Image (cartoon, rainbow, N blue to C red; front, side, top):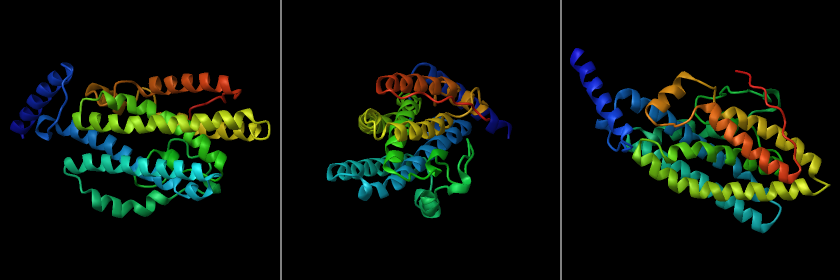
Length: 270
């Protein structure tokens, strides 16, 4: 046992020195068990979220208002499921049984809350690790647009840390994903501007924005959490949860000011 602990300590010292030099970790034998466990948790959360998000968008291919929009939504679905595939491939490279995980959770990924579960805050409703905003149903085209407007932008802010994370394979995959997320963000912003500017849809747009903005504010996690401290120690994340959330909030406030939308007050319930 003493030898094992000594080896772990040696690996951690070498690993932290490499991270501090700005170098990327590439192989599992260069990381401690703690680093690997933290990495697996983040990769699984993203993989499950990408796949579940794609599933949630599928109905809006047929419900989109124009043929052009049907194609755009279909492409967004393709992107999200491709993002999931890329993330699960990273998990496979770390020795995880991805096929079994997907088979066990495929029906769970389809699960959406009903009217009696309108607000679950930061809790999870199932055993999968998706970000819990993916439990909420997307019931109208306005819901779809405001989910797109808020959540894709929120996810983009989280991806910025992964772009510069200490695990090389994840950073490289994130570069590919981020380029596609930027297109999704632009789509949500384009439609939010249209719907906010139209007097016939402005009130519904504001109401629906309020709902999805508050839910998105919960996705970043608790401020000063012990797990986030560990993520930052190993450069798997670079910022505290609250710092990412505030950057997101300020950006959304600037966009909404241009569109004539007001920002609802968010009160955390930890």
